[in-house]
Length: 172
Image 1 (cartoon, helix red, strand yellow):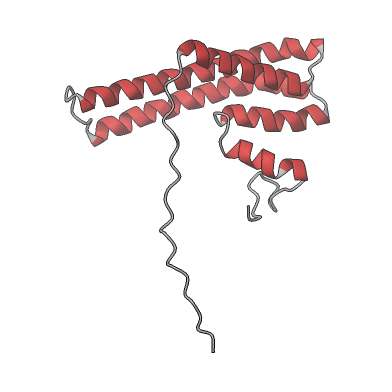
Image 2 (image 1 turned 180 degrees about the horizontal axis):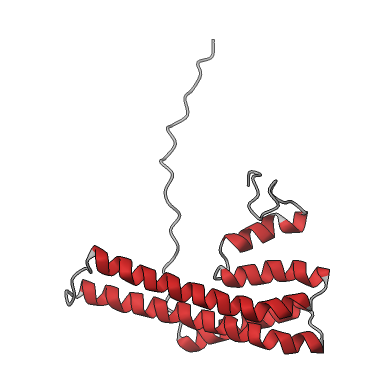
């Protein structure tokens, strides 16, 4: 009789590590931002009248990019100071206060974006609205986040979650 051979135990799954990427300069980040905005504009195939309504939306997108860049720089500076021993960790009350301020600022930016976006969106045709849902979702999620993954894996195959949202329940 043949004896069953046992396979060697599988190695424990290791976390996939990203290679270290050098920090990008402000000029490079600006070029990436310009490219993303140009991609959105091109994907939407805007008419001259729609382009006039796009300008305030683009301004709000750029303001959001700048706010995120400034927040990252501030966070990086606080971490460097803490690592150097120049500052102590803020108290819980201070951290909660800072979080509350960030949420308020984000809500204000979102409202400003919404105010600029409403007239623009009303001027789009149905196909442009569908495209806007994809490309602008990416922008609001910081590009490459869950919105992009959903769009790439599901939208182009016509799949939707049972509740109509972008959160598909189908296995990947």
